[in-house]
Amino acid sequence: MSAAAAALNLFMEKKPVANNYLIQMQQAQKLFLTYDQKKLIEKFHLPFDETYLYPTMLAVSYRLNRHTGSLERKDGDIWEDANTFDQVMTLLDMLCDSKDTRYLTGHLKSTQSFGQMFHQNLLENPQDPLAAAIDRSPDEFRKACLSLKGRPISGGDMAYAIELFDGLEIAVFFWHSDEEFPAQLRFFWDENALSYIRYETMHYALGLLRTGLSRLLSR
Image (cartoon, rainbow, N blue to C red; front, side):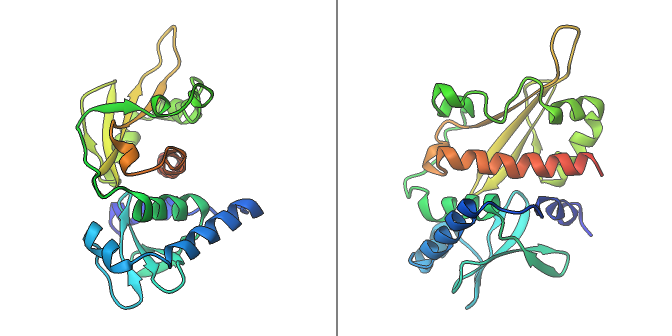
């Protein structure tokens, strides 16, 4: 099994989904069925057949049922259920709601700076256990990012840009701990990211990425 194929196994969460999340996910799947799929195929250059669209997200191969909105992901030669809130909502938001005029500027902006003041600490906690795990095993972090097809970039003590979908990358910056400060992990996006993804969906996508990195580090 390839590194990317092994990594995709780590995105599936087997925890119960609260009813409101399940309802929201199912509504998004029903809404997807109302979109002109031919336009989506052309917009994102998606492989397709009569039954499925075949997008790739965070180095994971997915197939999206064109008649039901159900999502699966590929593990080796096997397609597995991928109908979790973060996976479905992230992919469908980018497929259905990204702007036709979207483009990348090449300039990065932190996740917090896209939101309001009360959102500034979401997913970027100074006492982040994921940052502490990377601090203990930096080489495993490097391997995890590479297995997600990340590319090294400048910044921090270690930094990688990992493609989410449609060329939009999440830049992951890591700083080791020292005598004064704990290890830090921060996430950045292209400053024009909101033409690709909604602000709240950024946090769904970061949840997927953090879960994948955590499980790769703990293997």
